[in-house]
Image (cartoon, rainbow, N blue to C red):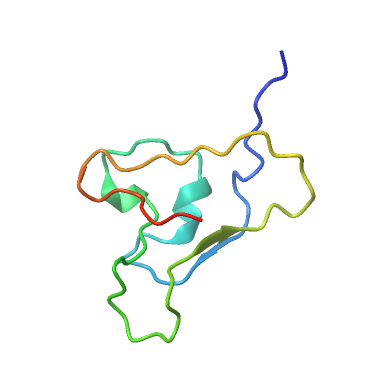
Length: 88
């Protein structure tokens, strides 16, 4: 069995909006405690800014080419009504 490796951990990230100090890098810092919102990356949805962008996005630069077998996204446990939606 092949070990699962987190190739995104510590890599450069960006997001279109940041709520409070919940910056994009917190999504790849290796902290899986989803009970403290201040330790989570948070985007504003629905759009609460005046930006001309119609979608909110979060990106990570893996800095290399990988064969990706799976992607796992951890959602907050604190506000269960705030779920990840509209993902493409």
